[in-house]
Image: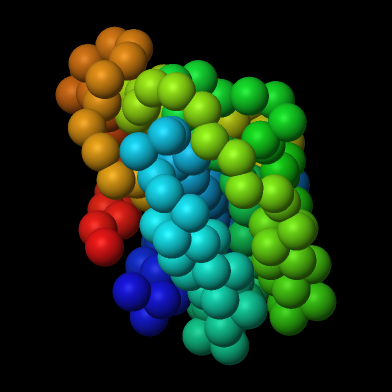
Length: 180
């Protein structure tokens, strides 16, 4: 499972065709990690999910992929979601341009306490992630939301509608199921 997280994180950073920066700081990829903390996630699933992201961020292949594009850096944000996204569950945008920045981001994730909340709004998480991508100070030819979770949408709008809106904006959505 941890290797899967590493592989998916590297794929999210795969080099895209160069495009001119439209505005903001130019990066190769804008990547959002959206992490399920709903009550359907038990501590074992939560630990697996978090360890996967932390290991992926520290992995030399991820760091190499983050540096492999024409700009040599990506922008990364992380948030935790359940029925809603809480402000205290967001790690804001940071540039990842090597091992030091990747390890610092991984340390921030690893230091967060375990907590869970009611509801599973995949649509809310996708909408929040799309908003992060639309309203940041970066510009990239590739924008990606990696959303992980263990259950179906049971709160908020239908997932297909929000997913389709994200896709229409050129946002890639990767679903990472957590099944133990």
